[in-house]
Length: 109
Image (cartoon, rainbow, N blue to C red; front, side, top):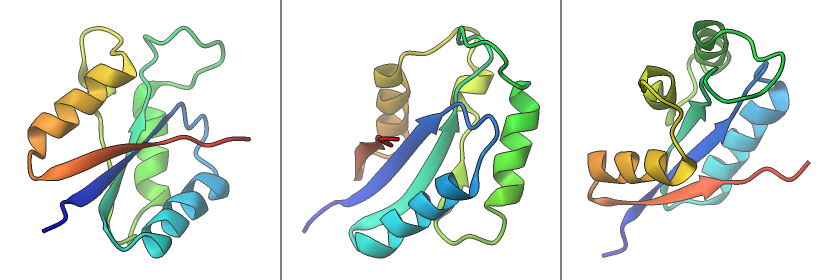
């Protein structure tokens, strides 16, 4: 039996846009083996100028995804005492979801 996939969509989401949400919806609609998509906003520990506070970006994502089936928002990087590398975040999500495969969404502008 094929494992279901969890798509992980990381980024600053500063702010989250309609394009982010529409891409997430398209991924879920076009790939029936994806169980859910998890947005993972980067923390302000990441060295990026003009990054809105963690809680503000997290709450904006939550609001933007309200009512969307199979979309979650993770605070894993926001809650970490240090900036996580992407591979560390993916490994933590994999450990929390051992029966799923994990894939990382890359958005090309």
